[in-house]
Length: 98
Image 1 (cartoon, helix red, strand yellow):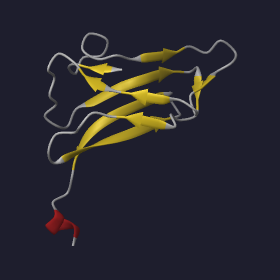
Image 2 (tube, helix red, strand yellow):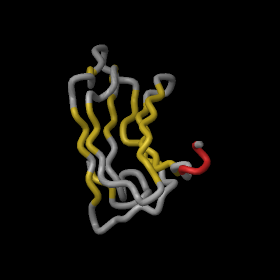
Image 3 (cartoon, one colour):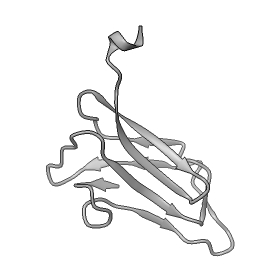
């Protein structure tokens, strides 16, 4: 999948799974994500990459591009509305962790 900005479809890819009676099991698949168009996130962005009612499981691996300094990628699966959202969340300074 490609991320080149913060607007779904226009700037970044999405996968839509429509239920047709048999859901796609994504458990044994890898999702590869890359930046395009010289996009550099600043932190705090969220990307709804997968949605729909036609998938089950979670990706066995997600290959993500480098996060900006001070941020980390967070994966959130929401089984209620059938989404996978990838967010850049701020890391706590080390002195706050002790």
